[in-house]
Amino acid sequence: MKKALLVLLVGLLFSCKDSAKVDEKQQRIWEPYNDSLEVASNADHEKGRMRYKLIQSKVLDKNDVFLPLYDEVSKMTEKEYEFLKPLILEQNIFSIRKSIEGDLLTYEKLVLFYLYRIYKYELDNTTTLNTVIALNKDVIKQARALDEMMAKGTAPGARHPIYGMPILLKDNINTAGMRTTAGAIALMDNETEDAFIVQQLKKNGALILGKVNLSEWAYFLCSGCPVGYSAVGGQTLNPYGRRIFETGGSSSGSGTAIAANYAVAAVGTETSGSILSPSSQNSVVGLKPTIGLLSRTGIVPISSTLDTPGPMTKNTIDNGILLDAMTGFDEGDPKSTKEEYPGIISAGLHPTAFKNMRLGAFSSLMESDSMYSATIEKLRTLGATVIAFTPPEVNMDGFLSILNLDMKNDLPAYLAKHTNSEHVQIASIADAVAFNKEDTLTRIPYGQALFEGILTDSTTAQGLTDIKKRLENSGRTFFDTALEQHNLDAILSINNYHAGYAAVAKYPALTVPMGYKNSGEPISLTFIGKPYKEAALLRLGAAYEKEFPNRKMPEGYE
Image 1 (cartoon, rainbow, N blue to C red):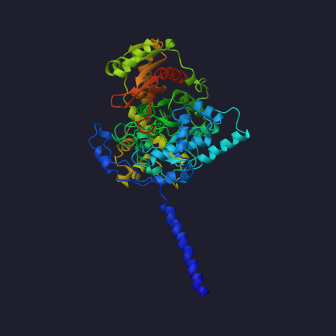
Image 2: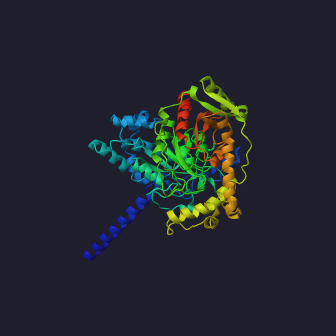
Image 3: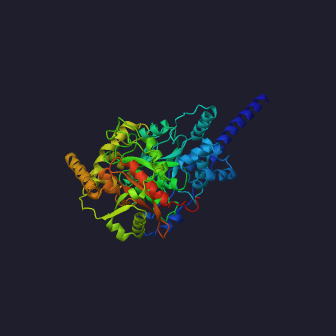
């Protein structure tokens, strides 16, 4: 009898354990769906690269991303969320800080508000933007700790404005506690320490909320493929028109997340247009800094010649704050500058007077784009001097070789220094190409033509040096002819139209919402200036933004 009872109890014990395991596995807050109808509806899209092959990721289970914080986030009620909206939604950092200091808001509630929005829209397959692909599991605890310090009076007295602000990072930026994938399956288990700019953000008190999707390998993998697609994250979608408008690339998740108010701000990266493009397409403010102002250490590279991270925000005030919070001299980056450039952090608060502006406008855009020409005329009526010009023709041949040869050298250097061979199987571009060929449908549904092009580029080391020097001269000639002849503060462009010239010139560029086309697609005005003139560009952008508050929240994400 005793023996039988013992057997029964043991059986029940193991049965309970098995049941617990089943319950744990069955706990799901998101279910994948059949995206074939959505794919089919895009089959005839006017833009060939928006004729998607898939929308959902084949490898990312959103339950893994969202379950760890679900219990905490689900405690926030809709009523509380609605109460917090006017304190947070579309507000700048100084306004949010004022609410915190006035005891109307806490750092914890700020984090929970953004998480609530992310869960609200990203777990609904009809509204998801496929943008947030990782969350910091400790972010609520970290926010709560800041509140406790405030209550005890032990919070730092001289706090950077970024202190306590939830920030999203493009998933090619190394972040401790979250994997850094660059959107590639080959890096899905890539665990790293913080990139230099992430160290700076944390040092200044920022809260890293999570990681966002991107065009895989920063859009240097496939040719003619959709922007915003990665094998890890799936197809990023534009909140102003899901599957209608492009997200821009490669910082697609950074642009779409800020457009939808998923965080205070986000960090993107650019080689040529990868901040300017998604910022413009998503009606947010994006700044591509001068090469060297921000460190690139710990960022998955394309080109050590042209790469830079940069801030993507809802307004120029936040843009300057985030940019300043990431600055600092990095001995590990040979392009990093020791010089300090004052005025960045407060630039958005001090707009340039229109009467003091001297700007250049492309004659060709004045003739071809009615919104651009109307904007130029409005600037003139406000007192700005705007001189139309035609830039000189310059030779841009060899641009692709810079990307090819740099990535061929820079990616192995990153992999050797920042990855663990136990978790990452590749050590070179050739390894990545071979790895992708093992499962083309999952790993490279759009092919890997650009990666294969890297392997076949026969440019010599001396040839590459000559190309870099020639193209830098070409880019600077393209802008300097007008800048210097007319003593201009900046050149005005549209979106990322002249991003390639700014890239090789290593000039900063700031894009600010200019309005919306008749279709509803966002369009932006871009200010391009001389090296290390970020503060000046932000003051110009702030003046424009104040007089022309063009940004509108996307419908359905208010």
